[in-house]
Image 1: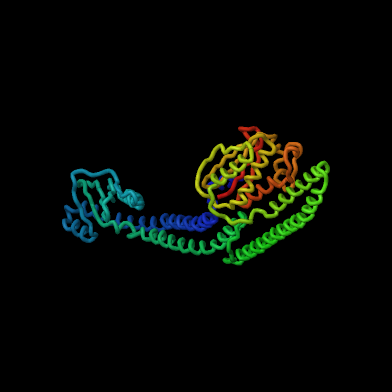
Image 2 (image 1 turned 90 degrees about the horizontal axis):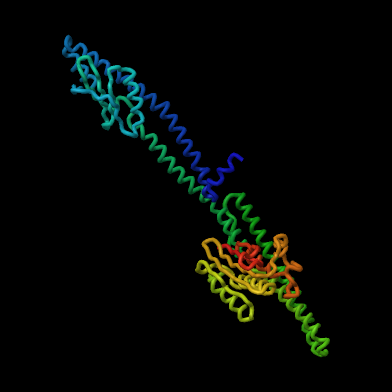
Amino acid sequence: MFFRWLKRYMPRSLYGRAALILILPVVLLQLVVSFGLVTRHFEGVTEQMSRAVAREVQLFIDAVAVKESVPDALPTVLNTLDMAVTYPTELSYEDTRVWYDFSAFIISREFRASLPQVTAVQLAQDGKVFLHLDLPDGPAILDFDRDRVSASNSHQLFVNMVFFGAVLTFVAYLYLRNQLRPIKRLAVAAEAFGRGRSVAYSPGGAIEVRAAGSAFLDMRARIERQMEQRTLLLSGVSHDLRTPLTRFKLGLSLLDDVDREPLERDVEEMQRMLDAFLSFARGVYEDETEGVDPVVLTTEIVEDFKRSGADVALVSTEGSGEVELRPATVRRAVENLIGNAVRYANCAQVSVQITDRYLRIRVEDDGPGISPAQREEALKPFARLEPGRNQNKGIGVGLGLSIAADVARAHGGILRLGESETLGGLRADLVLGM
């Protein structure tokens, strides 16, 4: 519950999460080590060196105090301590430093604590320290090398940490990418199979990834074998039934018109049912994917229905371009949706929307629609909804929506049923993943 809000800001891909797991501990470790070194090592070293130089400056102050009685004391101290002194007309009372010089705070603090005569510690000039001293004999500025109060090249440790941390992170990322590549290949193969494409895949990587890849190959083989057996079974049964139906037609042709017409209608209904079974048995994997313009495909389907006398119109299109899909199966799905619309309603409207992520073909009608409680049932094979979808207005076996739903799932999408806001009847959205 506490970390649920954090999930929105976390990477969603496996690469991003693995990189975060790898980089975050390295960065935190460097921050902790840097803080420890700065506070304990460099700060302590700077304090000791600053106190030592402060004692040397005290010798200079003592030499200034006795320069009248011992004239050679001041030059001797300056030469020995390797310091230079100037006598300005006025002193500064403001410390100066470079913005990235964090050790300057420690230096100023130690000099002010050890020498009450210090009015300012100026460290802005690279490599030099200028101490402004308020002495009894007048103001003085003492300058000496910066290396005497702080460790030289202290930044080298941080540079080494950042450089080698970056190098080792890059090496670890290459190794990590090599380990994640088999998982990505498995994900691509599984996604392609979910959309009806069978891509070449061989297990690789760690033992666990190989086991998952082998399990996927076994699962894919079983599903393909099951689909092939279902297709052969239904196709064989439907094909075998065509022979007795043909004999029925020949036998009925010898009867009188009064007795023949009802029986012929029954035979034609059985023929349509067999055609529906064969269409369902062929499934959605009978053709290969290719680049198709959905607007052109939908326009052709609508024009075919118009020529048959149906009140169908393509009312809007959004987006353009070719989409990789199975044209024959998509055509069958759209024809089923429009066929249901014109069968159970007076008019139908079709719209197409193409985006970077999905293709949506919407079919709306002004018929009775399907209640929300029955929409899930309507997508099942051989489902019949009475009386909302009146059987007297058309003949079907309940496979139209089921085939359309299978086509949508084979393309990584979904078939959504709802209520039309414009016509008041059923709204069917065939959404296909890109």
